[in-house]
Structures are given as C-alpha cells and as structure tokens.
Length: 304
Image (tube, rainbow, N blue to C red; front, top):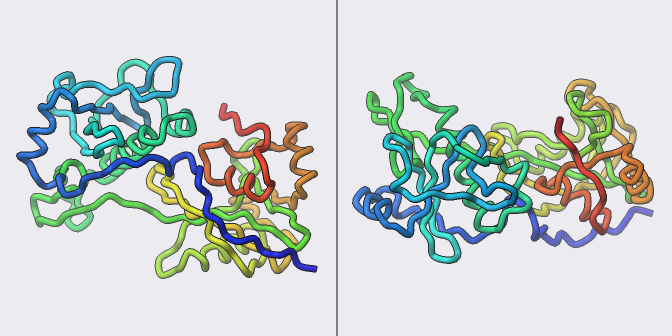
C-alpha cells in the first residue's frame, strides 16, 4: 500500500537561511546617507574576496573592521542592519589573517552573521563575474551601494543574478530514499538529486525532469519544504520531497554515475560504517535527508 504523504511542514533550521538582517534597500541610492553612514564609528565592515571573508582565528565568528581602516578604492557593498541595530557594509578587498567560506563555517555562524556573510559573498561573486555590459561590452561601474552595475556607454543598469535550482529527496512507496553520486565525487559521497530550473520551466517541472534525466525515475506528488541561498556562485536552492511512481534506476552516466534506494536502517548502517558520507550540515540536502530519516545522521563529506 502506498505510504501516506506527510504534511509539508517547512524546514526551519536551514543553515544559510537564518538571521533577521534588514537590508534597507531604500538607502542604496542615497549617496549622502551612505557617506554619513560610512563615517560613523559604530559601522562595521566585512572584508570579502573570492568567496571568503574575515573570521576570528580559531572560532566561527565574523571579524569586521572599521570603515577608517578600509583601504581607499575598495568597493563598498551595503549589507544592512543586524538585529542589534548595527549597520554593516562589506568591502571587496584582500582578506588578511584568518578567513573562511560559507561551506566551512556557515552552519556555525550566528543567524545574523550567516545572513551578512552570504549576502557579501553573493554580491562579490556577481561583481567578479560581470565586469562588462552584456549589451555593448563596455566596462561597467558599481552603483547603488554595490547592488547595481551601470554601463557608462549605453546607460543600462545590471542587477545581481540569482539562479534558481531544485534539490529533491525522492521517496518510494516502501519509504526508501533515493540518493545519487556524481562522477567527480569521492566513492562514499551520496546526496539528493538537484539541477537548475530552465527558462520557461516551473520549479515542479524541473523536479520531475531532473529526477528522470539523472536517475531514470518518475515522480508524482511533491512537497516544497524550503529554500536557502547557495552563493557558489549564485544559486537559490528550492528544497522538495517527491514521491516516486517508478523505482527502476537508470543513471545518466554523466552527472550521476551511481544511485541507490536506501531504507532508514540501510542508510544508518552505511553511514555508521562510513560506506556512505552525507553532505555537510550547511547544505539543504542534509536537512532533506534528515527530515525523512527522522533524526540527525552521523558523518559528512570531508573535502580533500
């Protein structure tokens, strides 16, 4: 008999979707206000470069600096106001001393800190990848406190890019979960299936297409469980559980080279023996798996 579908209660503890930072978008075009805010001693600035940001040595905490200590010429990015009322910018500049990325410390930062760091990394990635106008090829310049790039030749404005992607744990009528392994991963690494939403496609259609393309499995019902930013470099991950209408696996052999159905007991045993390692706690994939499993699982990927 088919399993009863659970109510789709949203995930509440996604590592990169925490925090209550007020982005204060209305200030981004006010040059006088921005200049005054930069001159305040209470303002904090997070150095960011190449996906990494300044952290305290030996612990997961941001290491901001004062505006007066930021080198001239560093691009300023308005991040917003944290829950304590402190105003934050990021500065695109070399990060001296201890530094880390979201994969390393995202799950351990406070909610406000991870929101600030994720925004800083996403904006820095966008500026690095889009230095020129997509219309005419001219070099663009940052504007609106780092949230726009403007072309001086054709006056066009360009905005930060976010690419939606679906990520899905497929469950069959025997309440088994489908996990796959990419060819470039370590032999023990398994995760949920995922892929980008294509132009003209709904997220739900992308779930069905990606699962069929990667594993040869068809799905019917699905439940949306939450989203989180994944700025590697600019994704927004939309998390789902979906229920299979077929169970025969036919991997594509390109992106996914191995896929397996796991019972709860089988996955627990495989994780305990280290036959299988799951994605780290910072990922929405881990939360989708543990929501199905019912409790935390041991072990995660250790990147070489």
